[in-house]
Image 1 (cartoon, helix red, strand yellow):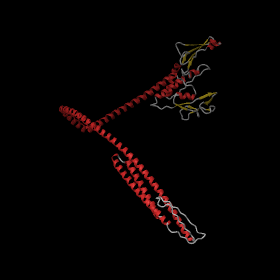
Image 2: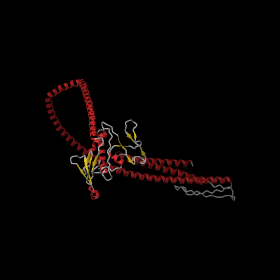
Image 3: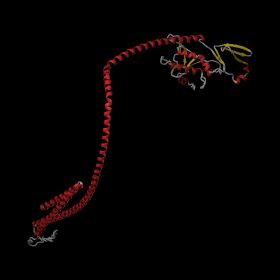
Image 4: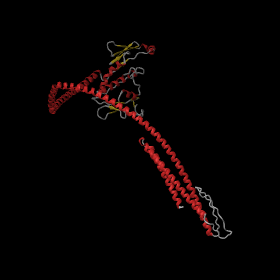
Amino acid sequence: MVENERLKQELKSCRSSELQKLDAAAENCSRCPHSQVHEIHKYIDLNIHANGRRQLENQQNLSLRLQECEDQLARQAATPTVQVGASPGAHSGRRKVHSHSGCCQFVTQTVEVESADAQKVLAEMQLKNGALQEQLTVQRQLLRELETQLHESQRTCTQLRTQILVYEGEMERAQGQLEAEMQNLEEEKNRVIEEAFIRAESEMKAVHENLAGVRMNLLSLQPALRTLTCDYNCLKRQVQDFPFMLDKAISEAKQEICQVISEVSNANQELLRKYKREMNLRKKCHNELVRLKGNIRVFCRVRPVSQEEQDSADAKTMLSFDSDDDAILYLSNKGKIMTFELDKVFPPQATQEEVFQEVQSLITSCIDGFNVCIFAYGQTGSGKTYTMEGVADDPGINQRALRLLFSEVMEKAPDWDYKISVSMVEIYNETLRNLLGENPTDKLDIKMNPDGSGQLYVPGLTEITVQSPEDINRVRKCPQPV
């Protein structure tokens, strides 16, 4: 048993060493450069021969071990037959052993046992015989595996030789291409060297010519160089004196600027004083003009007579104007003529612009801080709405006055701050109603302002700040003029 185990260990070690050597040879062959192909080829041949010799030695050792086992079995079979009487419990056994080498064909052993010890010995011998047969089977299987590995190694070697031949052919082709490329590169190098030499000669010639020209230029530039040197020294002295000159110039400039600023400030003060004086004089003259015209002025605008009024029974009522005085109006009713004297009378052909020009000065008084009121009264259909509101193409007094008001405010915005707010009050049956409030039906009262100015005001009246005529139109819910 120990001998068989040792034999199996030797076979396994031999097989693993052969496989490792073959793998190492294949790997070295696959990684080798073209310059080492012949060395690898020799190394593989040596490994193949060595492996063949080792395989042959292993087979011979295995055959010897098998022969020894068969001889041992033969010796056991040749021992004399032991018979101890004849009893009913005796039995005979026949054992057949096949040998791989063919030296031992059959071994027959007949044992007649009469006691338990003899039977025990017989059973042990049978067990040993079975174990030897199993070992023989294992050794044969190992031998077949080794033969298979040997064939695979030979096939691998054949493939490696084929690859080596392919690599040698490729190496020869690569060597030929390399030689051709080397020759081409050598020719190209010689051509480039020759061209570079020719080009260098021409460039050197041009450089010599340029050098001669530069020398001539240097000879001609020496006077200019001396002049530049003198100028440089002069500028250098000026640069050294520049900080002092700069400080002096800055101080003089500061003095001049301070003097100019003082003069401009004085001039501005004088202009501001004159402006205020002129503004007060203008305001005084304007207010005097308004006073001369009358603080309360009444204008009359006659609208054209409609066709229905001409066909009515009152058609005999006629209006006439004084051609010399535009403030007199004559009314003829049933042969009786009545004369009305007003501040101005506008005939039917008067335009919205002409009407507005008579009240335009009141807008200036409003900006100057005076209370101004413009309103129209008359019977239904007399043209109040048209005169005050007008139409989109031809706005009335309200829209024109608002435009002029905001235009004047924007013009004076850099010097004055103005705040314009709008409120709407309806007087109906001697009752004041806030039209911009949440509840227009709430009654309001007119009271004296408690600030002592003597002005009247309406407590609780809603006021909305506006920035343009469009804001006022949105508050009044009136269509904006175009």
